[in-house]
Length: 124
Image 1 (cartoon, one colour):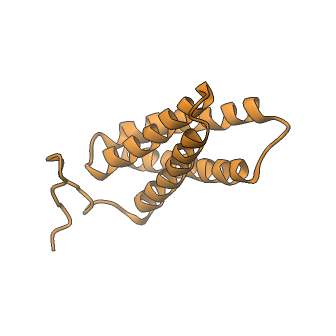
Image 2 (image 1 turned 90 degrees about the vertical axis):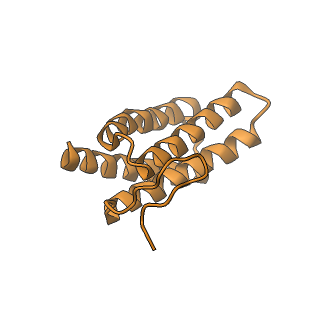
């Protein structure tokens, strides 16, 4: 079985060059993306809900870009401030009333930032 498969939209998955750290970043981005989509749906009637949806889509789009090998170093570079911006926004909006979901999501995001920085340094 080939590691380069064609997805429904004609994009070819290029996973043969992905390392364990790439897969870790993919899992972390998918987790935080899913959390943001869930929160977005939960708060859909408010502007905050829409910002969660946009953030979730951003994480999933970055994951898709890595999977099809679309300018990976640029995706890593843009992913760092995008993700750190989520952490800062979370703190500013929620302080001092932080939730368990928020703590888990931010731990995932900080781990994602570390992996993205490593991947960028290694591949650029």
